[in-house]
Length: 217
Image (cartoon, rainbow, N blue to C red):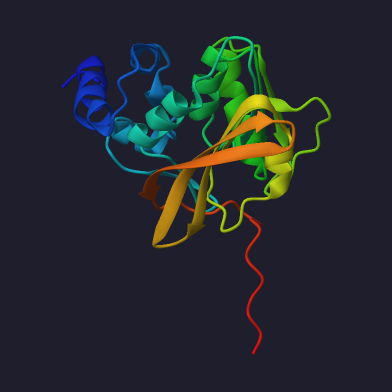
């Protein structure tokens, strides 16, 4: 089976059945080549419904989770995006294809360097990659229209809500294994947000993610 047939099957058999029906998002999956961002050793798995290991205990999301997150965030051409956890750089590329500017932060320097090479090779000039620990906050005075956390967090730091501009959207997977919830949080007015639970899933946590205080008896 050829690469394009495998990509088509991924969209039709994994992604569309997961309620990803926005045609712009589906078109994007044909435009940004997922296989170019998968580690060389796992390239044959680029379109399989599984998490692909990246090293350092991290993994690429499943294709359907990537597509669903992009659809839910409803990114506009004027949006400024913050991505916590660059990983392979593939989700970064999807975000950058739709937004004005993407700032992406990863704690692993090798991920930042590899993603930079891939994104530059694909002509993305609207991405700034940073190496650092942003599991609790990424200080920025101008704020963001869209924030996405690519690792789960037992507790969602309030700082991410506070950096959302009015109308801004935040996608985060919260809780602890085995059951976590994907949430879409929208800033409805200065200092006010509303949260919708989208679905249950389970992914690796962000390194250094904030945890609830342990009970002491």
